[in-house]
Length: 427
Ligand code: KE4
Image: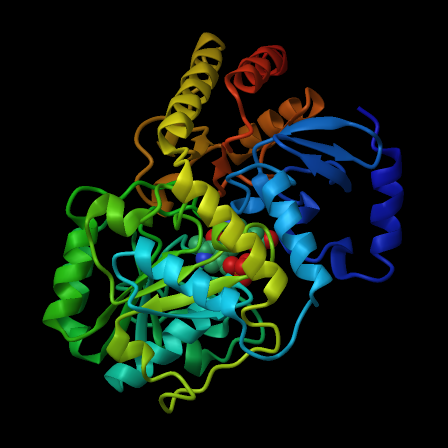
């Protein structure tokens, strides 16, 4: 499969854009090869500038539960654009979207719309620190909560009491206020919170982790987070940027029956346009300016085009919930891929919740980032390269989730498995 134009665009892009991409993971550094420059997407298919068509399971990292260029979403965005693209003033549609979010998410009584997941998480951290008057936050190894300084922190040595910067430019003094614990480790959480709980502003968790690859919460893990934060008067923050509207209209908080104090949403809530949200308890959100003293702002927050895309998407999901069919199609895909890998005696583990999943090349259970790090990332790179040559586009990194959309019909899944059978023969 030649990538003549993509290669040409990449070298041209690198003369203007760092690494030639506007987000690092798009550069395919983890899997090698030339990142295809995409020309267009329609339904389950993306076409690159060299004319190659792929069945797309990247789904733009999560927003596209309805597939690419859904006609209802496109029409909503075009209609909105004709009335103006941005006003820097309040609009009725923002109320409609906020009300829709409140109706769907059990933990959200008030919500502020922002433009990215990073902004939502950054605001949640500021709110939690202001509400509790404490500075320490907790995250879990392998979790990604956007690139605000407080979250670009790796586990410190030992008990992870003090995080250390995982990127240059993050002040050590700030990184040390972030503690990092192993996901799914109930004992570690209990031990840490019994010792340090009174100094913790909030625990941040991806309720179903997506950025270590998919990690499924062990029974009792999320409830433990809810219990220990209540007991220490800390807050529980669900980062549902991926899981919100992905695993159901009520996200993971509805699926697992845990009500967090704050919730961050992104991706699907913006219908593929730049929109995210930070929401939660009315008393905590009431601290946000102009109602309260905690400052947060954004020129394009609640942007009319993004709100139109988000509203159209959520209304389609509400009026015709696709989750049962997504479960069926995703289960079919996962079992078909597993059968093919088993037939080739390739050790693997597929972690899946609904239409989000990851194939790990490892033996045994993968329940934490520590487990995930043991998997064979070279094998993943080979697998990824083989699939893309056969027209199947997976996320170009092992520690990511891939997604099934409503556009991935049973025929598309059959076609995927037919192509994968040919591709896997080279492993
Ligand atoms: P953004 O700032 O990229 O909109 O959202 C940050 C974010 C927050 N929380 C979770 C759970 C997330 O997964 C993300 C962003 N996800 C990555 C992929 N796993 C976005 C892809 C990229 O960085 O290009």
